Length: 124
Image (cartoon, rainbow, N blue to C red; front, top):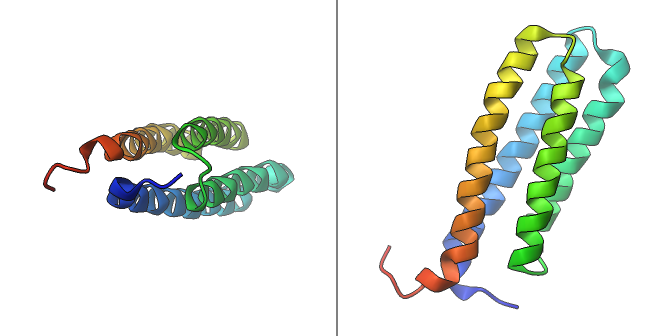
């Protein structure tokens, strides 16, 4: 299935996935340097989820698949990050605020991507 009208929204989706993954790597490093080394494997699992999201955004099977899959992975990743940093209030507060920011970005990018085929005749 090809979505020719979805190119700009598709590019934004990929950009969001890349930035999200890089931020997950940063949070993993923060967790490690905050004396939370024993929970690092959970953090790496979170980063793996981010990479899985990135792969999915690069090769989606369908609009439905990418929306369902990315929403699920983003939610799971959020849960893992919050669990990861629960012993550090400072990072936990940052994460909580930041995850709301990322949820909003995911929603915006996914909705734009999903509706792009219907907007392809409109001027940008």
